[in-house]
Length: 159
Image (cartoon, rainbow, N blue to C red; front, side, top):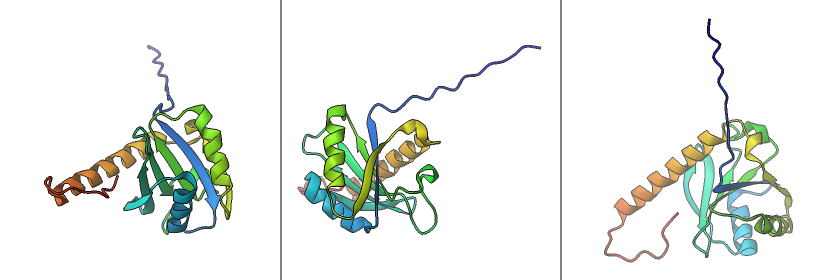
């Protein structure tokens, strides 16, 4: 009888950085405060798995920020992070030198209890979360392209 060995290798995604935010604010209020503090322009897009979702493209054009509510009426998006109210996902290259100033700015916002970086290896099925979120935003972008004609100039297009 042959012995079959399988190894599971999970690597951390290189183009994503995840932060957790704990606070007692509503989603629209925290997006407003993050817009002011971080100089972003979050706009609400279609809910993701029952949780509110906001998106902002950074001025440098290389990063896209997603603000995602971890809790909704029905369930918790990431059960491993029960105490985390919101997730701030940064898509694109994000250097270590940028992380600490970002966290300090978030922590300086009144009514935010804490903000911290989340390591992907602590999340059980992060691959599914990232794939579902990417598919969700891709579908939203496709629908927006269909709604607007290419001859009209759109100034406020959602992410």
